[in-house]
Image (cartoon, rainbow, N blue to C red; front, side, top):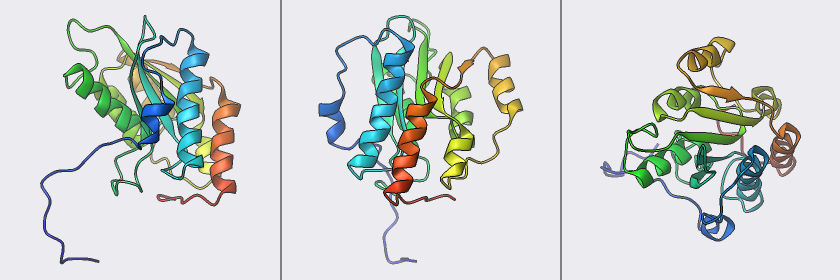
Length: 194
């Protein structure tokens, strides 16, 4: 351990530089498959460019398909265990709309598309994020199969969200999401929490 470093009073949440050129924020993403393909492409690029783990996410306005924010797994790159793709997408979306909740008065409903089922932390944050819908590609079992520990996520976890009005849609383009996880394993990607 390094105890010779001074204390810090801030932490940075940022996307890799390639994201700005790879994502078009000016076009609406009209269908679920288009929105999910963006989340999966982010995960894929993060793996291929060596900037993080095999997870991508995006927050959209639910009705219009307007892209609000994206996130890629940045745990290792930014030395922060909380910077999963969903967490980054939530933080940047809330910063963009200038509200601590995506369900703020006067704002449209928002939804999260994620390349893999959220872990315990991200699922917990989903409740507080203000999204009204979560759409998932690869499953928890797919992530576990390559060595990731997704924490205590249970059927009751999803039931809790549903009971509070969050719509959960699972398995959209699951094979494409799972392929990114398999690619990460094939490249010898670091499993930082397994």
